[in-house]
Length: 437
Image (cartoon, helix red, strand yellow):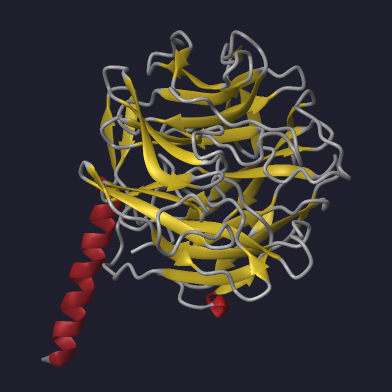
C-alpha cells in the first residue's frame, strides 16, 4: 500500500508540475503574460552567503533564478577584463557557500567591463549586456544547458568611455530586459552624453536589430545612468536616467507604450538629485526601477545635500497607471539604493549612513534594508554587519525581470564587500548572495 501511495503521489505531482508549466504562459492579444513559477514553499529566512570575487551595482540585474530553480550570478571587477560567473549546483534556496560553484570566466578583449546586466529569456539563455572602458557595448549569450558563453556581439562602439586606470566602479551605462515576445530591450549611455534605446531579437545564435527601434530617448543631452524596465501588465517600456541638463539635477523618464509609441519626457524627481565626478561618474546614484504586476512603476534615487549637511536621503517614487509620479522622501539615508518586490512587499536595500535614525544602520560599512507593506514603511533593519576588516560600502543588485521571474515570493540579491584594513580597496571585491525575510 505504501508503494502504491508513493507511485500515486509521484504521478499526481508530475501532472501538476507539467500543468503549472503549461499554464505559466497566457496570451492577451499580441502580448504574452508569463505567470512566474513559485516552486515548493520554503521559509524566507534572512540569509547572507559569500560567493566569490566580483562586484555589483544598483541599475544592473546580476542575479537570475532560472526555470530549473538554480541561481546564476554574474559580476565584474574594477581594473580587470574578467567577467565572473557563479551558479548553484542544485535547485532551491542556498544556505552555504558550498552550494555555489564558479562557472566559466569571460575575458573581455575590448577594454574593462564597467557594468554587466544579466538578461534572462525565460528558457535556456541569459544574455549578458556589457559596456566597457573603451566605449564598447556588447551582448554575450550564456547557454544554461552547457554553462558556456557564446561569441560576443557588438551593439555599439560609441558608449561612454572611462580611463581603465581610474576607480570607476559604479559608473553605470547600460540596462536591459527581455519581453515576453522574445525582444531584448536595452538602453545605453553614449559618449556624447545621450541615452539610446534599441531592441533586438535572438534566433539561432544571432542577434538582429528590430527595425525602427533605435531612438535617442533624452531630448536635452547631459544624460547618463539609464535604467530600463518593462511592464508585466502590458509590455510598455520605461527608461529613466540622470539628467544634468538643469540645475538642480533631475531624474527623468520616458515611456514607450505597448503599441510602440514613445511619449514625452517626464520629470520623476522633486528633490535635487545627487551627482558627482569623483571616482567615476555618479557612482552612488541609480536610479533603480521595477514595475509590478498591475503596471505601477517603482523607482529609487538619492537626494543631494539637504538640511543635515549631508547627501544620500533615499527617495521612493511611483508612477501610477494614469501616468502620475509621486515622490516620497524616506527616513533612510544610503548610497545607490536598490529596489525589489516580493508578494507585493517593496524592499529598498542599501548600506547604512550616519544620518539614519538611531538603531542598527548608522554605519556605512553595514548593509541594511527597509520594507513597505501595503501603504506603510517599516523601520530600518540590518541585513548584514560588516565582517572584520571588510566594508559593505557598496551597491546591491536585486533579482527582477518580466520573463523568468522565478520565486517571486522571495527577494534575492547580491552585494559586495571590500577589504578595509588600509582604506577601501574596491579593486578586490567579494560578492555576497542574500535573501530577505
